[in-house]
Image 1 (spheres, rainbow, N blue to C red):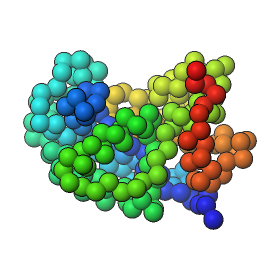
Image 2: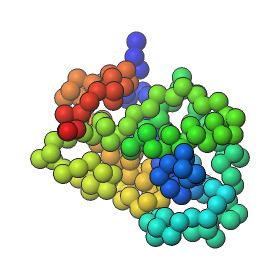
Image 3: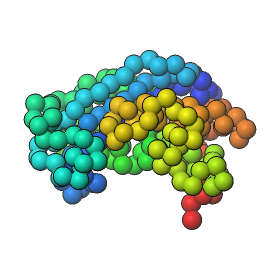
Amino acid sequence: MSVPLSQTTFVVIDLETSGGSPAHGAGITEIGAVKVCGGELIAEFHTLINPGHSLPSFITEMTGIDDAMLVDAPPISRILPTLMQFIGTDKHSVLVAHNAPFDIGFLKAAAADHGHPWPNYRVIDSLRIARHVLTLEDVPNCTLGVLAEFFGARTSPTHRALDDARATVDVFHAIVGRLGSMNISTIDQLEKLNRQRSPRLK
C-alpha cells in the first residue's frame, strides 16, 4: 500500500550554482535542504561549496555569493556523502525541488563526476505540481517568488539555498493542502501527478 503523504518524509532541496548547466562547466556553490514529515520540521542542512572556479559577475549579483565566500568552502566531493546521509535512503525519503530537473541534474552530475552512486530517489517537482493545482486566474506563473507570495510563505526566496528551500517547504505544504480536492493522498498518487503534463503548459 502506498504511503500517505502525511507519513512521507520529504527532503526539500535547493541549490545555488555558478551557471546554468553542469555540462557547460558550472558547479554547485551552495546547498540548502529541509527535511519534513507530516508538516513538521525534522532537520535542516546548509553549506557553501567551492566549485573550483571563479564565479561570473551576474551570479554574484543575483545571489550575493562571491569568490571570497567560497575560497575556504569544501568541494562537492567532500559534501556529497554527508548530504546523502542527511537525505536518507531512497526507500525512506522523497526529494522535492522547485524546477527539480535543474537541482537534481546538478546533484546527479556531481555524483557521477566523483564516483558516488546516486540512489534511486523519488523526486517531486513542486513547480510541476503547482501547475496542476493553480489556475492562471490564481497566479500568472509558478515561479517560487510568485508562489511564496501567493501562499504567504514564512520565508521569502532570496536566491540563497536555505532561504529558497524553506520557502519551497511552505509552498509545497500549501500545494499538498489542495491535493485532497483532487483525491490525491498518497505518495504514489502524487508521483503519478508529477509525471503528467500540466494543463497550464502550452
